[in-house]
Amino acid sequence: MWYRILLNRLILAAVTLLGVAVVVFVLVRVVPGDPIAMMIAPGASEADIQDLRVRYGLDLPIVQQFTVWIKGILAGDFGKSFSLRQGVVGLVVGRVPATLELAGLALAIAMGLGVGIAVVATLARGRWLETLIDNVNGLVLAVPDFIWALVFVLVLGVLWPVLPISGRVDPRLDLDLASNFYLAEAFFTGQFKLVGHLLTHMIMPAVALALPLAAIIARVMKGALQEAMLQDYVVLARIKGFSRLRIVLQEAMRNAVVPVLSLTGVQFTFLVGGTVIVERIFSYPGIGNMAIDAVINRDLPLIQGLVLAFAIMFILINLAVDLITIVLNPRLRHG
Amino acid sequence: MVETVHAPSQGTFGRILREPRALFGGLFILFLIFCALSAPLIAPHDPLEQDLLLEKIPPVWQAGSDPAYLLGTDGLGRDLLSRLIHAARISLIVAFVAGILACLLGTTLGLLAGFYGRWVDTLISRLVDIWMSFPPVLLSILLVAVLGSGLHSVIVAIVVIDWTRFCRVVRTETLAQTKLEYVDSAVTLGMPRMRILFREILPNVFPVILVLLSLEMGIAVIVEAILSFVGLSVSTDTPTWGGMIAEGRQVIYQAWWVLVFPLAALFLTVLAFNQLGDGLRNALDPALRR
Image (cartoon, rainbow over all chains, first blue to last red; front, top):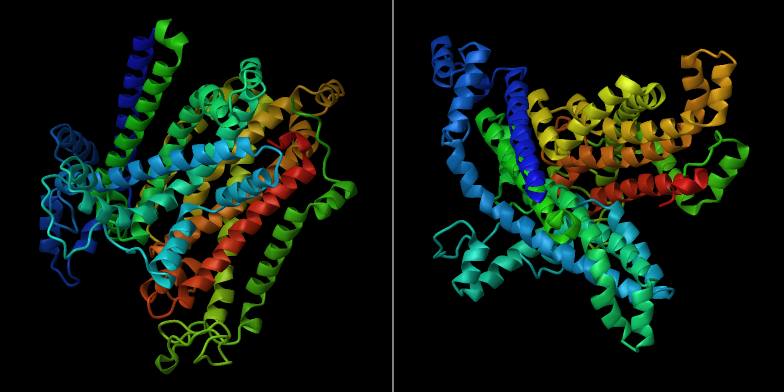
């Protein structure tokens, strides 16, 4: 049963990816305005322009361009970036770890914060604290990550300068790392001073990304917890004299985990989308920041590569959510 | 269950006025509209006039300020208050034009899908599903890359991405209305179907559309601000809140106020549209409260 669901999802993922690839290819080819014109100095000769068109394969008929393009992609060749004059794959792969680490940290913060707030609100049921939490939650939900990021830059970066406001690491620092997963590698090789340093750079963008998601998690989880608190087994536990905190954490939580997890999965893709602008604000070297530069420069090969990288991330997140749901749902697991 | 919703009447209007959030949101947006319309009259200075001798003057309550520049000046000596007032124009144009276009497109398709059902519904619903499986950020990156920067691209991007919000909800509401008795009666009376849809059903779905529209306008303001922040909206000659925020980000260590005022304006505007939407939801349709 479950493997059939999984197989279905895998096929769907492959179809989605192909769909994205086709959409990207078509959209980018109908661009009004010649991308070559943006690459060269004004006053270049007609022969130079033609030369470049041939080099980037833009002189071929569109169907042939597509077959060349798709063959290249299957062979892992996404072409060369117009603006950076380097292979797209290398550029994108070099940047992906930075975005993954930022999004992962933000997800962890959002879940911790959301669950914590929901538990406190459940314990404070009917008191002023619950009203306060609900109101703050509503405000947080109304404000997008773009505004949070700028407020943090202003307050914690400038007015009360405790955190750095740009980059991933201090450029003066001499890094001794083999991969681009700075945070993970530093952590697992025991360089905890570096971990702390990286976190000071990542914490503001991560929290800005996390806040809207934390508010949604808190709201849904609070609803699920309060519903569970009315169930017979919880009432029984209370009669037995267990503390309220213990009941919430041990009994009610079990009831709330599945709905919250499936919601988090869907919302996490929005968080990953948010990295584009938040990375920009903090000059953080991930693929989101790169995507904005690529759009500004109309660097078509790079845009294609980046959009596909994002699409792969979204598809993997959805697959992971499906897997977790199968694992947590006994009916699907044993069916 | 969805209850029968009556078209807004005098009583409804009173209920909106008694809803504090709708009142705050509505009044703030009216104030913005006033600022945008009368910008050349009320702005104390030309928003584009540069004077490098007057650069980075702090707001009046700070030492070293100039009473002629209430909120101070930016890195090029331009008056912040005047720029703030003029920039409200772009935000409101995008909010209203993009919001209403997305609303018209999504609502029309939603009404048709919900009312006619069968293959019309299948076709439109599938389209919405496929559309929504494409993450908005990717779609906007692609659209702006294809269309180039500018106000029209911003508006097109918002409409192309967000019409589904209206379509899904309007379809569900229309479907629920279609099952009610008054629609049966109208059919029995021999009323033309288009007339039933637009004269009978549409007014009953209208409150929901109004709530969605208000929320959508808030989203449109943010999207415009983000795109002008990264330089992909209108040209930099036209003041926009997003553009001002980007300029403020660059001189943040020397002049924090250049960033603070446009950021506050953006925050309040987004909040106002949100509060208006939530307030309308409470006032117009208790069944919608979730």
